[in-house]
Length: 145
Ligand code: DQA
View 1 (cartoon, helix red, strand yellow):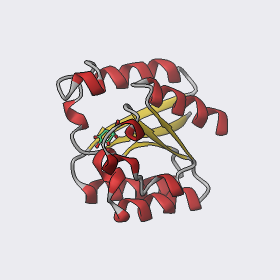
View 2: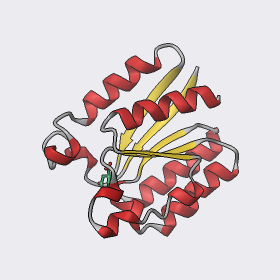
View 3: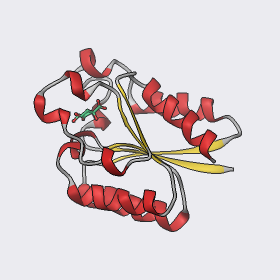
């Protein structure tokens, strides 16, 4: 069975209590449950979160080495982390799908959120659908495999 890495950047461990008007009231465990249910016997969901840029970069290297597709919510790293961009580019340049997701629609928010340094190397981008952004990304990845 295909494993899908679902990688979440800084402050997403606070989902549920963090700005519920923007990010909803469900937490990462609820996200894990819905994705695991959606995946059924088509994929194994490996969901992780980190506030550490280096750790996230290491997970990109792991995805390359294990040829594992990635659903990535880079959170604030989206807007400035060239280190993460370069690491994510290793994934897609190896022909492994990497879908950038956002719970909110960053383009409808503050100006600094309108720039993503990740989108240019991502296989695709899904934003603004709440947890359904991840669910749509999972459908895309299963379809691509
Ligand atoms: C986010 C949007 C980012 O701008 C923000 O820094 C986040 C979450 C989203 O999922 O909507 O932490 O990636």
